[in-house]
Every structure is written in structure tokens, then in C-alpha cells.
Image 1 (cartoon, rainbow, N blue to C red):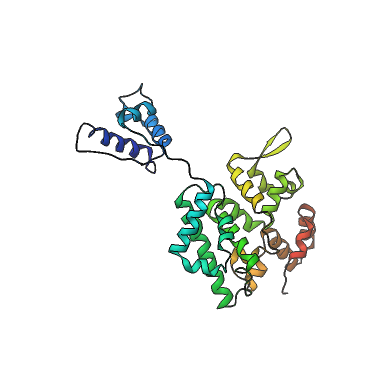
Image 2: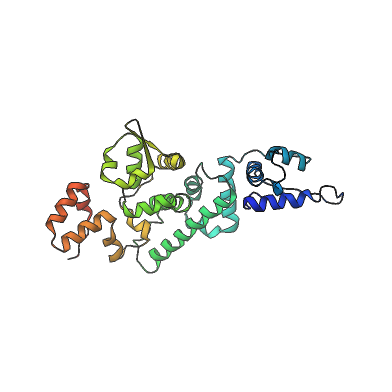
Length: 288
């Protein structure tokens, strides 16, 4: 019931209320009680209970309440492991004995529902299937670059960003150093934020200090937990390919420098390097 809109929650409770005096009717409702309380207090059933709070209404409507213990992270990991083994055993086999390690990356502390587990597994499975096909078949990827021991863990890390922190994943496409920059700023290195103004949207400024916004606290915990999982080149993991276009794509900063170089705009290159990190020039791939 808590997945309904506030109006429909109120409508459903109102319907149940109409049958409470019928002996043959028994209602078993699974829900997040806080969401129901908020819906009741927002809508006020039929607008006739102005002095009735949500908790009191639910206590009168339901005769018995059983509270379930919160789902802990280890339970979610066990659930994900068993679900994958039962539903997608081929995916488990594709991980070459590393699936338990992959689960430790995918099922991070912010994963709290079975629906979220399924979403994470689906995204990771899709990425794995595409990468494996391109490594084995079309040869658009170096063999085991992504599905090998090191690469597969980073693919799981990116899958979490795709699923649960999509705005970060989108920003990563523009700046391949984004994850490292966020950690550096969080640890007190303000130089990174001077290079990339877009990082300001992840932080608040308080008393001359940059403080991570509350919405990204789960993200920073995940990035710190997986800081040891990294690769030299993010591009193949984002585009799941190593063809000429993918190699030349680079991040937005590299592409801007490359356009200036190809067009002979030396002043544009100099101005850009003065403003940005000069090390990016060494990462350019030019065919001309």
C-alpha cells in the first residue's frame, strides 16, 4: 500500500474502514507505517477529521500491528547471492568464481529493498553480457579487459553508479576523474573543485569549507569503500567498446583540447590548459 500515491493510500484506507464492522472481512496490510501516516495527515480522510492525526487513525483502524525487524546489509547480500544462483546461474558462472566478491560491491549499505537488489543485478548482468559478447565475438574489446579479474569489479562499481547514483554516472562521462575528485574534495583538497565548477553541485559551502550534501552521503561511503577498485582507463567500461570512436571520445575536457588541436587553434589550447589540468593533454589520442 505504501507504493501508492497519497491520495490512493487515503482512498484504500477509506475503503477498508467501510468494511471494519463486517465479520467475514479480514484485512492484512503490509506497509511502511510512516508513509501511511504522512498520507493521512496530508489528505485528511474525506476532510472530516481535521483534529485527527495519522497515527491515531491507524491505531483505531487496525486491531493488531506486527513490526518486522529492519533488513540488514548481510541479509541483502545473502538474498542477492541466492537470487542470482537460482534465476541467473549463467551470470554467476560468467564471473569465474568471483561472484561473491561482486556481490560485496553491488550490494552496498544503501541497498534496502529486494527491488533494488534486482535492479542492480539486472544492470550488472546487461553490462556483463554486452562486454562478454564484444570481447569474444566482435573483438571490439580486448579479451578479458572488462570481464577479467580486475575489470569485472570495476564494472560492478559502475553498475552501482548507473543504478543508484545516475547523476554521478552521467557526470562521470564528462569527467573521467570525477570519482577521485569527489573523494579529494571530501578529504579537504579544494584544488579539484577549482578545476571543475560542476563539482559544486555535490557540496555546500559552510564557513569557508566544502561540505558534502546530505543526498550524497551514501555515495561517499560507497566511493570510499570501493576506492581500491580502479582502472587506468575508464572509457572502455563506460562505452563497452575500444573501437576508434570510443578511444577518441575521451571525456569532455579531452575532446575540447582535441578539437582545438585539430583546427590549429593554439590559443584555444593554451587558454584551456591554463584553466584546466594540463595533464589531460597527455591522454589525448590523435589519428591525424
